Image 1 (cartoon, helix red, strand yellow):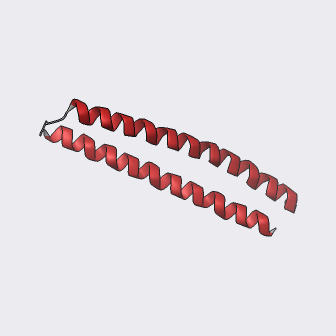
Image 2: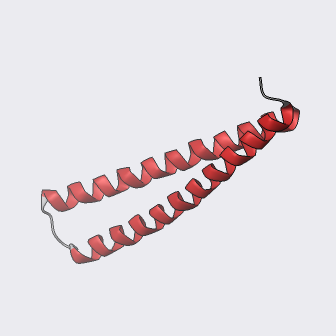
Length: 86
């Protein structure tokens, strides 16, 4: 079994990786937001089902990114709390 300091170090390393992933998720969200705005402008006024479907899919994609961000953030908070109690 790992000692307390090894556990803390492992948690810190994992949280660093997660924080880097969180930064990437924010970048993804920003890019998708820009893509969505560009698509909206390009297809403005079109009532074709594909246009509406693509907007829905983009919105759902952003929601999934937001959910992932929230879950990963909660993981960091939880593991930080655990490490502090060791």
